[in-house]
Length: 208
Image (cartoon, rainbow, N blue to C red; front, side, top):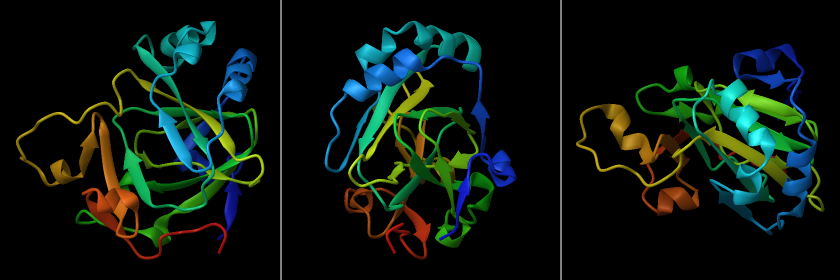
């Protein structure tokens, strides 16, 4: 699978590199968080939330909206699922990593063919915005020994408990958590847990 750089023109349709924000203290805290063998996600990490840069994220990147500073750490090479939110997500890694991305507009009749997915390499220490219309999920590691430690900054409450809703639209079947619409591949653990199976085609694995 071809892996583009986030510095490539192709990435402009999916997100952007954010410059001008000092992420040194952010990087220091992320490096202190354990690296699991698989993938673990924490929606809101107090050590990150208490940093002065969290206020900058809230004011400068979200225009004053309350922000939650979390992380996704571990080792991964597979697609498994794709999700989207109503707001952008910001990622910053202490190590280089790869994001598997697609566009919300590529969902047709509730399905997305995984041949639409593109891979993007993110250098260590690079802050990127992933647009709200970009489907994404867990990062993939570049170096198996180092894994990945990635900031996940989102509006407060995102990925929290799924609200109880009356099913009114076709999109409602995709709602998996608060502000989290999910398309799972049939081979994924999420599908086994009852997530909507919306990814068709190969479950991409960067080791193959």
